[in-house]
Length: 279
Length: 272
Image (cartoon, rainbow over all chains, first blue to last red; front, side, top):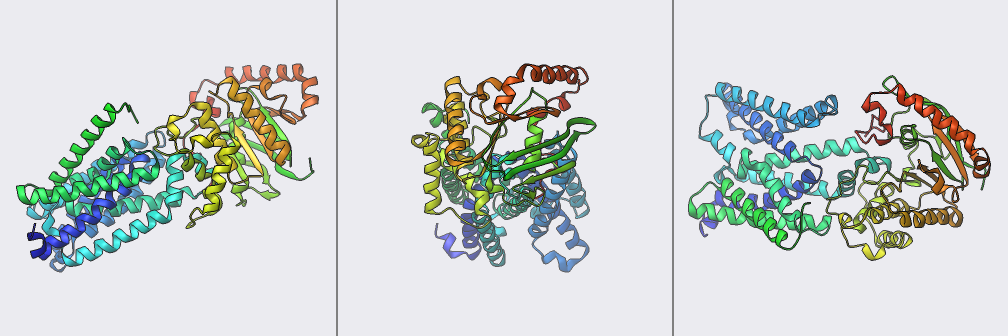
């Protein structure tokens, strides 16, 4: 445990993980209840495309190699979310197709970028599966600021997001500006994905947003409780997973998600035993 | 009943693609009236309501709410709306009755404002009105259809609307609850002077509660007091339901057929 206090990079990883452990599930509550879990998955893959693009630029133009590719990833995720939204309007009755189109398109482009940028290397590997050593002091402060912004927005727009998630038609009828709130929501989701992937990696980031929420849903007696339970489950899994990974020498991202899955399975078993059926 | 007009629709027509759903409707609703809007399934009732609420983009004609062009109208909290049961809400949603009713205040509050103690008081009062106060901490999914519907009424009432619009609110609700429900509406109308528009295809059940009736089947066949309506009822029914047979014969396209149950995306109504 003392290693976390001795090495600065581990300390920043720990602080970052603690923030993400709360932020991802809290944002995930809205992602899940709006039935957009798959959207989160698509956005995380678009983030990969952005990262590959950033690595490619770094190769062509060496000074750019100093940029943290994650920020380019976030830019791509926001751009991709706008595209998904456009496509959802074109395929009005087949909305989920929009997600698949963008997801596979993004992977296609991403893989091409990766091959141009010299193929897979350890750098890319850490973006795919997460890496605790990837968090620098600057990263930490940027993550801190962005996380605070997202949390603040969540508090400010809680009413609107809640109403739109529960019953979109009624929300619009009562004068809530659906399109603007939705756009904001997507941008926030893209940001949270970009922030969370530093810890668990792109392939596992949507798990961090959905698994704690799914587990919390089995017990939550109100919408407020759902937030609290999801945040607690998320935080406990992230911290336990991080320490476990450190001592067992396993991949932190995978360990965290594994713990989340375990909690989810337990919560289903326990709530079933208590007589609760489907949600 | 005063002469002030809460709703004024003039020459309103609406098409889904090439399908004519509403044809030259002029409908005026005076303050303090309780209008029963009746018509067979697919007669355009829900479309009319959605136009009124700005959920569909207006095509032809003019619509005024509280004397203001409804495209410029911003006082949506003066209008309460209860849609068809289970129309668009997700019953597995982990929200309590209190949380659901609070939503009724969100539009009025506006952005960046939180609920105050007084607001929470109003939520309790609205629940009291519909007799659901004891269920306030239950989640919405734990309630029966009739109870859920009462919660949604409370949500519409919590912002003290001057106009309450109900779209087939009693579908799937048991008979006893329906009676209680109509009695509640009559009280709101008579004691608080609330203007009500009740959309239904069940003309019989509501006839002893409403003050006015409008019969719709693509065009407006009748609009007037309930007494006149009762006298001319038979002839009206023949006209309206005769018309419906034609509509069905010429309409095999499922999507266009189910306007009253059209809960798809809001067809380009109010922008964000």
